[in-house]
Image 1: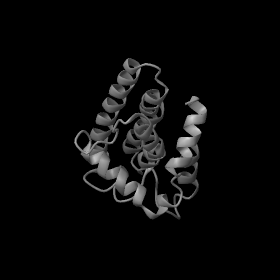
Image 2 (image 1 turned 45 degrees about the vertical axis):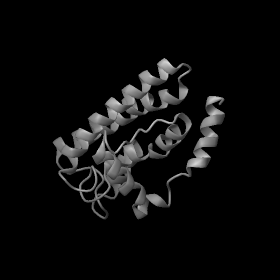
Image 3 (image 1 turned 135 degrees about the vertical axis):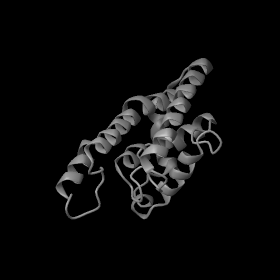
Image 4 (image 1 turned 135 degrees about the horizontal axis):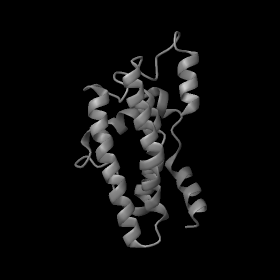
Length: 156
């Protein structure tokens, strides 16, 4: 995410801002991006790495609890708009969106639904909008290729 911040700072006057201008709002967006990287992704990936059903269930509960918190964060940060960044893709959108391909892989590998319309309706709709955005759909990795890599990496 450091590179994303660099891009935001270098092209701050010529393009769409990635982080909010307000220092407090910037801090909130940075906090949630770190949360995604340091807390949520490891719990999600823990589902795939789990060697027992008990460990898989524990990781799944942690991942769902994290998504519930991210659902609440989306509601606050988006202020009723399309993305965490408001009307446009922002910092937290990039942080969480970077893992959507992996979420699909883990769903296929395990049969668990992570972005569930019932448990996290706002995030489920957000994920669809994010992946359909013209800036994203061209660069979103193919699930099949990620699946091959995950199987190789996990030895499954």
